[in-house]
Image (cartoon, rainbow, N blue to C red):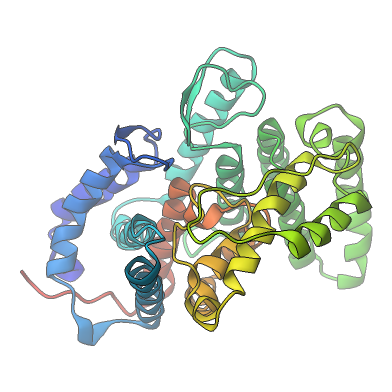
Length: 413
């Protein structure tokens, strides 16, 4: 239907969809035990999805759509089996991906009339300003747990948490630095300016994975710009090392949260927990944390969750294949890859990876964005973070329109 939309309706859908990226996370109807309920976003997306669904042509799907369809099938299949036989999982988590994929089509339509760089720069400026106000204690925010009066410890912007805005800044950095068909890669001077500004904002979040990801992205950018690749190591030494030293030596939230991260006590406790964890027939919550002064607190919390999740996934051949069901572990497992594996099994993990791999092939910018997602997923459930994944699919749809001549084909309704 994209080809049959008038320019007026393309703009309406584009503007409404893009506006959702700026809305804070406010639940109209809360769901017990979950961080996300029914939001304004859900209602608007439902309205936007109806004409797209009615006009969809099954005989004209591209490879990205095919893999996304297989991924959705794997997720819903896991939900159905686990709900019917074991009364576990939450189908709303699979419907989240339906919403994310709608943003792929919104981004595609947005490309017909608007410039995504201007949109994302505006998003960065608005969120950056709010993050500064949050850091100095002048503004609260709507986190995954609801409204918080004080988010000065870790800025969250207009997103659900510091980890989410950190990952989004990673994504925006990729698009601005590596460019697209409309905007070539930025100059070296602008690269450093963009990096310093975005890196400073990430430090306000105290989120470690986005911090690491940003440094990796900078190394990739410098490598691609090196005429003689041998000198790349010198550029790394000249640029990355000072930033690492600054992060380590200047008091900031990332360092204060990482004092015990590399302690061997972390590994010892993980092995002990995995060997002694007891599975419950009806999951009611993760086991208590084994406290230790020599271990990293965030690692201790993850360890208690991961050991239980991995033992449950490895319990039967069925769970090995299809997992324990999307949403089985509640709002957070704090490890995207482990969550994806244990909740959707080998089948879900494979279809997810293949779907994102197809998106990565659209352009180098989308390759870098998908890489950013994969790195963040090591310690964050970023793959189910609404605003982060919506922006990722929005960029993917926009980039698909600009890099491929083959249009998405829809039938008239």
